[in-house]
Image (cartoon, rainbow, N blue to C red):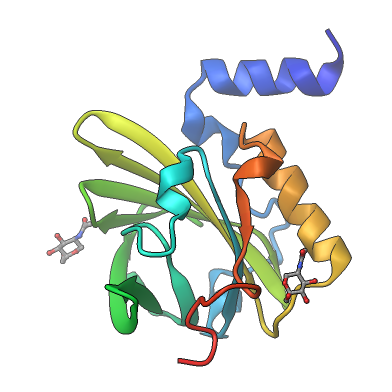
Length: 177
Ligand SMILES: *[C@@H]1O[C@H](CO)[C@@H](O)[C@H](O)[C@H]1NC(C)=O
Ligand SMILES: *[C@@H]1O[C@H](CO)[C@@H](O)[C@H](O)[C@H]1NC(C)=O
């Protein structure tokens, strides 16, 4: 067994949260995710959550980080309409980890944080089932090739196949709502 695979197996044995290490770089601050964003890709361990009208499809436009919370200003498609929604998650004791009450409960992990893009991963727990949804945000759409590549690698290392990644700048994804 080669080393990256061993690391992944060990991480899986310790539970899914062990896969989330945060940005690693101590100079990266939670406030870096403040401001305007575009959701440009989404992936999920559950393909049906990627249907455009699914309750887990998030088209984020803005994020506001405060002392105790993180606020996602986003659109959801409801019966074909882009409906603005604000979702508020609480900070937890761990840096880069937030709790959200939505469709059961969810834990949100911002990762791969950089000034122009970042990834957030949601572990949703509902009726005893855990699903993972990953959203790629960029300051401007569409994403460059290397940003998409970072996202694909991230998904792969979290057990999500490239077939379960969708491009949110291609279809009607509330981009101009
Ligand atoms: C977030 O904190 C508020 C205020 O303390 C609390 O009412 C709410 O239930 C919390 N939400 C979650 C998801 O823990
Ligand atoms: C996503 O779709 C947009 C618009 O069609 C395109 O410009 C972009 O290259 C696509 N990105 C990827 C990674 O396929």
